[in-house]
Length: 194
Image (cartoon, rainbow, N blue to C red; front, side, top):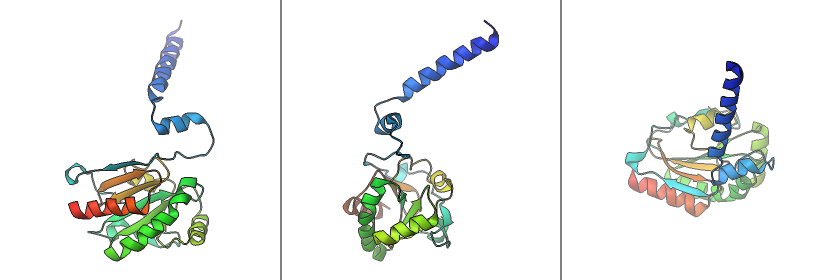
């Protein structure tokens, strides 16, 4: 056996071991292995909160709103910001839109921002969906994945909702659809704990 052939066999063996190690029982892995062609990984509703001393670096999120207006977290210092990663092609996203709108109506007067981060569709499609759903909170256009990178790898499922504290550090995350009560509770915790 040549060195090249031996290397190919060794790499193939390592790859198969790696794939076996990745097929754990978590729901995202199960979804990926289902092969149902839904083109997204839905979260399972897992909720995570981070104490102030456990939060990472501030999120720097910027882009254009669906109407083309520039938007950035830098323009909203000392503000709690809720970021919802969504798409109108995502059934769980559609099911939570009304819940997000109710939360927005309650949080906006308290100085809390809610911003969508649309993915995998045109701004026109996203805007048409939000209008038809009666959603009035702003949303960023799909930017080819830059927003997902800015969210520090914490939005691997669609939908994902992140609560950024006043320093714009990730304080809480819901992986999957959320409810008005859950979102308001998470924001209340962030506001109460700094």
